Amino acid sequence: MLSWVDGQPAELLSITDRGLAYGDGLFETIAVNAGQPSLLERHLARLAEGCTRLNIPVDLSSVRAQLLAFSQQLGAGVVKLMLTRGDGQRGYALPEPMRPRLILQAAVKPVYPSAHAEQGVRLFPCTTRLAEQPLLAGLKHLNRLEQVLARSEWQDTEHAEGLMQDVSGRVIEGVYSNLMLVSAGVLITADLSRCGVAGVMRAELLTQAAVLGVECQVRDISYAELLAADEVMLCNSLYGVWPVRALRAHDWPVGPLTRKLQAIARDLLDC
Amino acid sequence: MLSWVDGQPAELLSITDRGLAYGDGLFETIAVNAGQPSLLERHLARLAEGCTRLNIPVDLSSVRAQLLAFSQQLGAGVVKLMLTRGDGQRGYALPEPMRPRLILQAAVKPVYPSAHAEQGVRLFPCTTRLAEQPLLAGLKHLNRLEQVLARSEWQDTEHAEGLMQDVSGRVIEGVYSNLMLVSAGVLITADLSRCGVAGVMRAELLTQAAVLGVECQVRDISYAELLAADEVMLCNSLYGVWPVRALRAHDWPVGPLTRKLQAIARDLLDC
Image 1 (cartoon, rainbow over the protein chains, first blue to last red):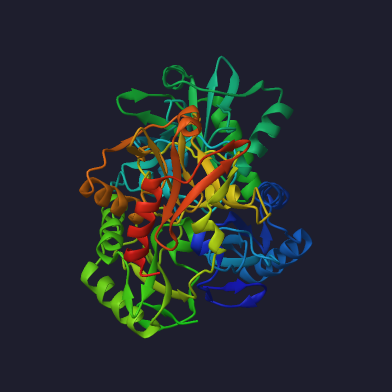
Image 2 (image 1 turned 60 degrees about the vertical axis):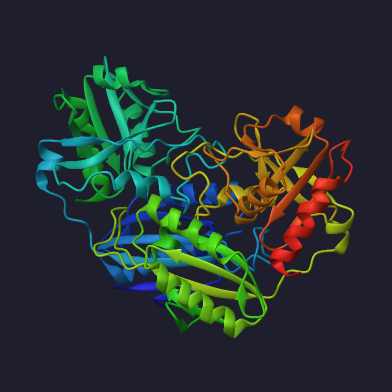
């Protein structure tokens, strides 16, 4: 598949890259249709916020230009964008000067069973809990061992996603999605100031729901509250919205707000 | 400098390596003298434990053989060993089959001011706190953004290391060292079952101190207890032992057990 490192076709990078050494970098997973990246501004905004918080000096206009040119060449599929702090010497101290490295990798769009979107999915109850680290919370950084451990907890195809709670038992997100629930007409999603990844689709759907006049709350969610919800859904920037139908012995119906947001996501992703 | 990827001289690796994508791997930093890796068995044992806990299938005899051959070729210096889960497809699920990748990088032995070992060092009080994640605690894995953030808190040369506490304020370790203190003749170091890296020099010094008849305790340490200690020291597998002389306005003397362990570490590292 197509891949670029710093704007040049390449499949290799230096073993001195700090992305490898320390997970010192960020990534974005971007759907591309007809040569155009979906949710482009939101992806770039999250990347910019990550760079600010991790102190990675980035030329965002160059990132944008490379991503657009790469997407144009790809046509349709998925772009995985990684931005690392670049090469480093031995030791944690920031390299001087820092020369961040941009890696773009193409992949085919994943094909999920149509039942996931139509009838909804079953969540696997992961025992891997998310640690609370406010300095990294919300970012899509390259330190993802918690997700690797959580995703390795199930191998069957019966579970399309896993539920991740934090170390205190709060309901946070899926392994590769954000979670939203609907209770008495209110759209609720977890506060991600202690842990979790603030997904671009989550952000977009919160905005769109507010436009529809739906009250939205971003706050802590208990496990009991999840079970008591009227509707539960997952979202991410590749598949849009999946209704959640089941977790352990619990069942939820597929509700009207889930279907409404699913249609919006479908339009955004052009899928 | 000399570097090998899977036993072959190489300076590059695939951008599909999961070490880059997710920090999905482990590392060891090993002092080499006269072609021999120091504390070899302890480094290999920690790596093996990490592989077990992260479910990375490793051929340890091959790792040992490559490390020994590499060290022989290097002669003297530092070997950074990275073991990743190898190449992956898009997504967190474990690749099938898994082909772990071994990366060996040589570096010159760092030269620290002799005053660090002789007179002791000043600790920088890092505001970056360590999150509590028992599933990863103790391992020297490749998710090291907390250390990157902590090390970026100071640039002056007055502070040789930084003090890291956990999110609850317990005293845990240095950014690239373990911390030990002496109180009423007892050697105390932090319990690393929630966070922190279980250093090989820490493990070796605990064993050696016990042989000397010193009582050793591995348990939680409060900030107040650190300040009240008779002696404080740092240790790692490159510099051995440094006495800690100061933190903020607080001063400690350099004590006899520190000097004794420092001499032991010097013998182990042949430096």
